[in-house]
Length: 174
Image 1 (cartoon, rainbow, N blue to C red):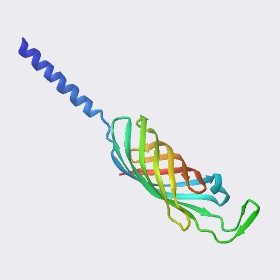
Image 2 (cartoon, rainbow, N blue to C red; image 1 turned 135 degrees about the vertical axis):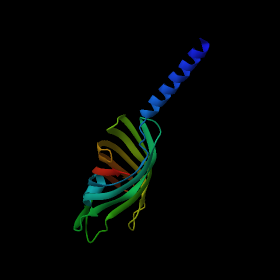
Image 3 (cartoon, one colour; image 1 turned 90 degrees about the vertical axis):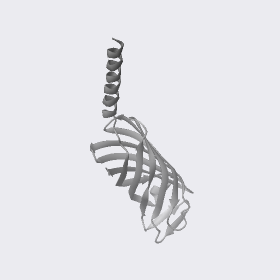
Image 4 (cartoon, rainbow, N blue to C red; image 1 turned 60 degrees about the vertical axis):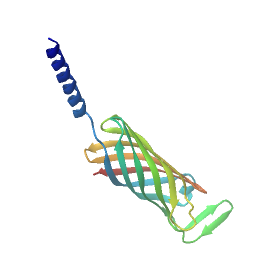
């Protein structure tokens, strides 16, 4: 009798173990995509459109949490006409405002198809006179397929001025 009970317990534990492993979702992946944004804050005085490239790698820590790294390229196209700076009017050819973010990425998955998260790090200024600054990007995303995500985000770079924008993006998972 003890032998049968022992065998049944082992079979039950193995069955539970396999069924729990089958339900695990592995979201570890490389991600690449593009986004377009509308600047506001100080930067909206100089630019009315931004486009960027997003790259990242995420590791699934659990069924609900991912962590990873994120980088990319952001380019805010500057209006090359006149800019009012207080009582002064400046005319000329201004360079685009460009950043390369380097950040840690965190995502929470309330459901498989919906995610909330943020990228936090430093944005390196690329163009001349751009020093870079603290980078923060909260994101809300929705999976439209197994390999495609649509997201909206707010981007904030704390530089000598306020670089803020609202962006819409698409990511492809590999």
